Length: 156
Image (cartoon, rainbow, N blue to C red; front, top):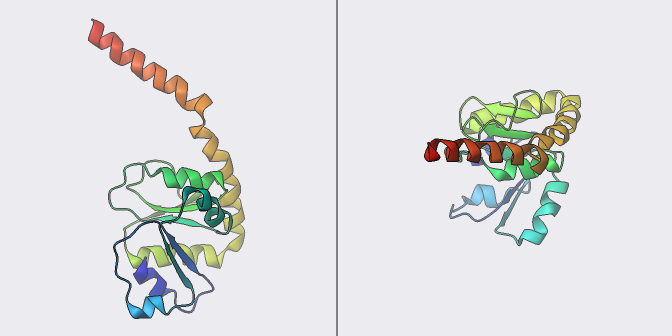
């Protein structure tokens, strides 16, 4: 992400980093007025960051299913994510999938959105719709079915 910040130096974007981190920020990043390094925030304040954002970025190497991407979509945010985040993001529909977890790939994804701002609002609407795939009404029956199958195998 820090590399993407530097690659997008002249672009009309700002970045808010929210959550605990042990990264030591270089002075050039700390001095960048387009970077807001928030650190850990109380759960009650998280919604404010989602509501003030246009896009949520989750460039993880190993988070098999980041719940934060579902939270972001519930706020209508398109998600830019790595392919390591489960099957929540449908490329070009409700966000963009990164071909690699790198600053260049993140910067290029942001540039795609900057070049076609209308795409952002379409992805936002699709995010709000796609979050319904993860509602209790849809997930619970699948959960019960899975449990039933497992119990059936155990009891045989």
